[in-house]
Image (cartoon, protein in one colour):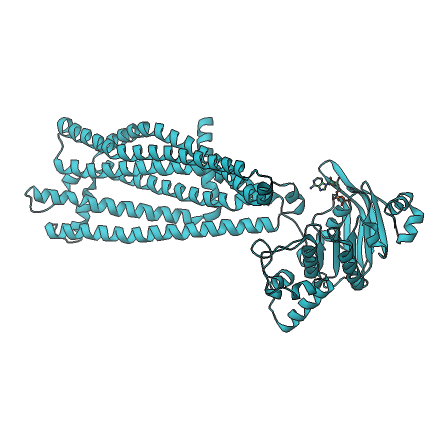
Length: 598
Ligand code: ADP
């Protein structure tokens, strides 16, 4: 019983995964395979009447065909006289029909395969898009990256070999069935031949499988080293480790090639012994049939044809099943990955807020990462178009608070309301379009300055005006004007390298370009020199009163003019008030201000 269970689990978990994605398509493809097999078999069966004619008989009879006699009877009942010409034509017809069926089968397979790949990719993008932020920050970025790229390719390869195996199994069954119809003794010999060859090839398959695993592992290592070589290029070069590092890469290449060579060796052995073994079995079968069963040569030859085909498909089945098993790890990985992502999809409601009327309210809000409480029982009102500064020591929860307000993750306890609407009822993605978020790590896309700032807007006159204004407000207009290609200059890896400060200003320009109502600045100006920081501060100053601004700040000088300062300590809300009033309320704040010489 447990054997049966593990058998079903082993063979049908994968089937279930494919079935969920492809449904009826799987069965339709299999029906086409059966059709190809049957038409081919019927065509082959026509050799028998031909042989009879060679034997000197004028017309074909059904007796000589074993249980396949129905074919001859059927044709006769259609009013056909089975002379040489008719038999040849019928045979031709069967093979032409087979050709047609083969075309549909092959083409349909490609269609289903493309459908599967596309569905998988689109599904993964959707899962990733709606992956909740909290789960994302604790996820393994390497695994996400790898699963969405290389591993997806491997799943597609797994799909290909899985269905190739199914198809081969179908063909095998069809031929065994036909062979059985023609000559039942024969079917037993087919089974014997199958088991015999299976036993022989298993040893080689095992070896190939081991090697394939090794190749994958070394491949991971190689990819990892390569990524690091590119990412740390400057460091490796500057410190003279470049050559030493190259040796490691070369060693990995050597290993991969060695394993590939070994796989090639076993592959060659497999290819070479396949045919002789098949023929050996065929020879044995002929001898057995002629010497012990005293069968007519015609039926033996027909059975042999079926037998030979069966064996061919059996071997093809073994090969494709083996290559499927080699990829099955990737299949398991992707179904686990998708399950995890599905479980951690963000949820949101459908209430829309066209424009903020009053502002935000945080009620008894707490937030934890696992057991670690990061924010505790926060009650806070943030009015529209006011500027708030979140201050506190590093790790006190300032960024987390900003993230919660940005709707990146739901509070563990308590609520966040926007104009009285609970965030959980809000169409958050729609609302988030009104949020500008600038972090310590500036975001620069591999694209032109214009596209980086406008996020691929049409270069219409209005948009261009908005674009130049945003550059001006972010204090980067002069820099861009001095570039040879101006707004069309490429940024990022393929373009010019900006300094940390320039990147930051570019990110700020992007947010200023958008029509936002909330601007979150998370240590946004910390990478800038004092002079640029002052310029940007002045520009942000200009935005004061036009939008709700939340500033997460270390440097207290930057938030002097905030309407309200929110002081956090160890996840607790310590106090709130204007810069001046907070100095009077909080001893801690007073000390921090004194420390920073403000
Ligand atoms: P601040 O912005 O005030 O420096 P944060 O809000 O970034 O503080 O972090 C508050 C606390 O939450 C810190 O103790 C930090 O270690 C913890 N924290 C932040 N992100 C994560 C995370 N992804 N997983 C677990 N703990 C986290």
